[in-house]
Length: 217
Image 1 (tube, rainbow, N blue to C red):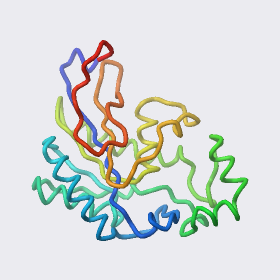
Image 2 (tube, rainbow, N blue to C red):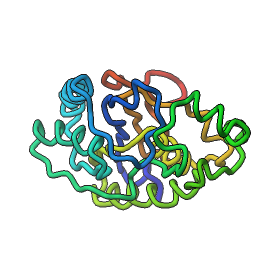
Image 3 (cartoon, helix red, strand yellow):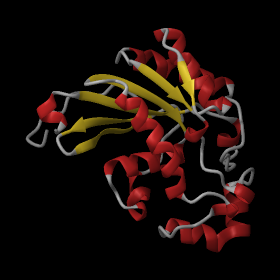
Image 4 (cartoon, one colour):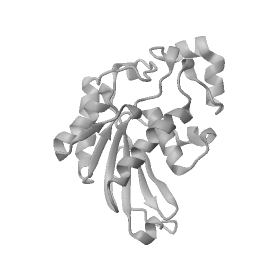
């Protein structure tokens, strides 16, 4: 039965962690466990106040410190527990991890170019983007299913993992996932359950969603 006919109104908010020192240095973090900067903590606190007003029913987070600390700010306001799951970690990128953008281009230029063309690439000998989606998307769907017919789930994760998860939930081909664009620190995307599955309602947002008033709603 479709969401429209069954009356379901579930939403998923996919929230990227706050700023880290490696973000500022443009270093590829991947699964390296980097903590938030002071600015990152402030970003998380500001965003948490906004997201709390949406009355989330559950919070699940990557277990890496930058995501867990971001999730903790929302938990402190809402009183909700946070479930941590390693399958929501950022893409493991092997030898790319810890390198700056310029160093990656200098050492792995062809690999980088192939990745940007949408080819399946194990960056630095690490995971394929489809493998990231294979581990992360089921976690999100499992927690969303626990909401019942309504409710909002907040998923705290990482830019690459969020993009691939959104692509998978929307049924896009992996080659098209890059078209979703990236997420700024502590910004989020919102998926809503529609008649034909999940729909992207907001992307890279830093303010509260507003109703869509148009013929395509």
